[in-house]
Amino acid sequence: MRLLRQLIEKWYKNLPEEHKPKFKNKLKSLEDEVFIPTLYELVTHQYCLEEGWTIEYEPKVVTGKNPDFLVTTKSGYKFILEVATTMDSKDIKTSNKKVQEVTEAISAISTPFKLDLHYLINPNDKVKLKVVAKMVKDWVDKLDTTNTSKRYEMNFGHHSLSLKVQAIIDAPKPTGGCVLSVMDVGGAVPDYSDRIKSVLDDKANKYSSKKTKLPLIVMIADGVGRIRMSETTIDRTLFGRDMITFGDHDNPPMWHKDRSGHFTPSKDENLEWFGKRTGLSAVLYCSLREKSSFQMQVFHNPFPNIPLDEGVFFKMPQLLKWENEKGIIMKWVISNPESSRIYFVL
Image 1: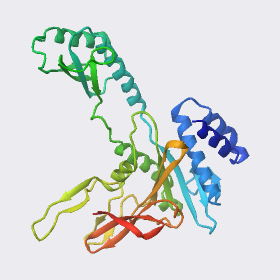
Image 2 (image 1 turned 120 degrees about the vertical axis):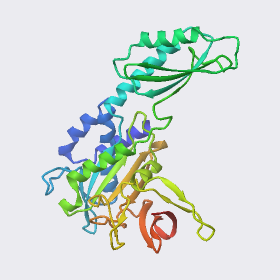
Image 3 (image 1 turned 90 degrees about the vertical axis):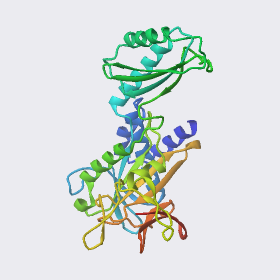
Image 4 (image 1 turned 30 degrees about the vertical axis):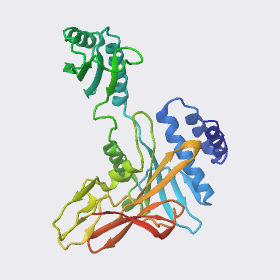
């Protein structure tokens, strides 16, 4: 964190003087929703500076709105760059807090059983902790303690709470209390694709290349909370989930994507490809890594209204469109196209 602080202080000095007070106040904020987006704006500004590009911060464009950056490269190429950070919503934060409170209330129960909790529906503030704890306590008190290897299971409901509890005696003793494990709604790893799609649509509605006549790039940056995002999350969001289509002995299995991607193209009646969300030229994924380094990758829209010149971000891995007789192939390019590999087929 000390290195990151040093970088922030260094990068802050390179901001235009008129924008420093605004950045300073946000960078001092203890609220993640304020600090983290500002951090990534600072990262973006610094990257553009080090490329030798000219940056206009929050300029007014033809739509009457103010994007984060209007960037002009050394060659005079212009594009709009918007920074978006994925965060847990207020509802999820409230729910996370309630999950913790309910878990602690149940964990305080005196019982020889070890409990696994699986929250089936996110609880809200109407859930009464004492009521839930008593319901679980009354249930476990009636269970047979002589069969130590048997696992018991019961579902509990109370206002918005839907909770599955499993109880067993023959299990490792928890560090504290009686709760052995907790599983959130939807399993251990939430899928934030819908939230990312919503963010992208919001940016495209404001700054679509169809309106501004400039390529639009949206940076999707890591947030906080239960966010577990990687380049795989972005890939799944933009191009769909992995799937395999099995054929007969003359047609080997084909690995490709389903149709759920935000950028997934289709064919018209003349079997010509046409794009989706074409007002968005590309998505730039940015993630803070160890030692205060940043992972950055560019995912190009295969059929944008205005294509992003791939030479702009030639230092980064870029997912580009390649065509063949079977459909559209996307390939990762890292400086040298000859080193690319087939990524997926639609």
